[in-house]
Length: 233
Image (cartoon, rainbow, N blue to C red; front, side, top):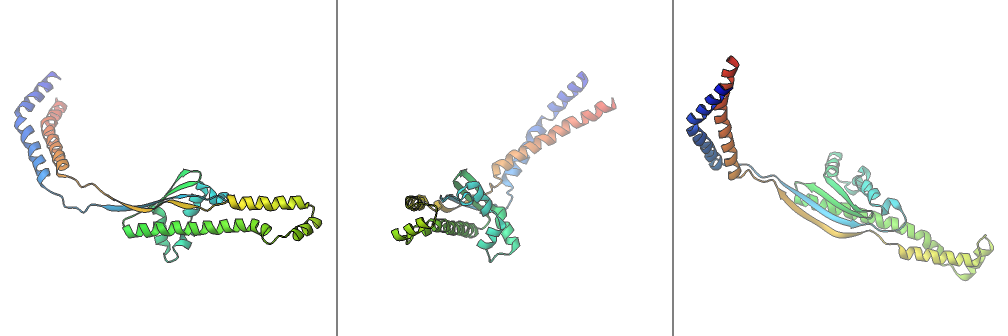
């Protein structure tokens, strides 16, 4: 073992010029030898939605809405001009984060800036339209109780039902309060597009890599022959 150590020290001393020259040479080559490559550019469109309230969990719960928006049938109705392959590409580029029980962050990533902006805007608009439709349906249930109900009609209802006139009036007041408490979903942060680029392999990084390769080569030149000599012994 001591003999191998002495041989290693002697080889290192004899190889000092190589330890200096080869790493420096490869570092210099790495610094000045530019690798021409196009940077990879990607885009992300982002928007935030605060959900509405009208007593329907499917439309007022963030997790439920997340599942709905990423559902293939919703995407198909939102992008009727897209073929199945393109729809699947859109689906894979959509990320939805639930910020709270009623708040969503929608992100759509692609390599085309116009595509991500237009795509996310269509998604957001389509959901808001459907949300308003569901709100109107729910409100209509209570509006039918209130609209056009005169005192005579109420009295007639009271006579032909188990409810008293007071109870019918309370039902109308309750229905009115329900409608007033309802509100639709809204966009809290409009669609914004951001750009990201893959970092180029800079000249400094190439120089460091070249130097490390040089050190590795010299280290192999010094150590490997000693390993084979030890095996022969």
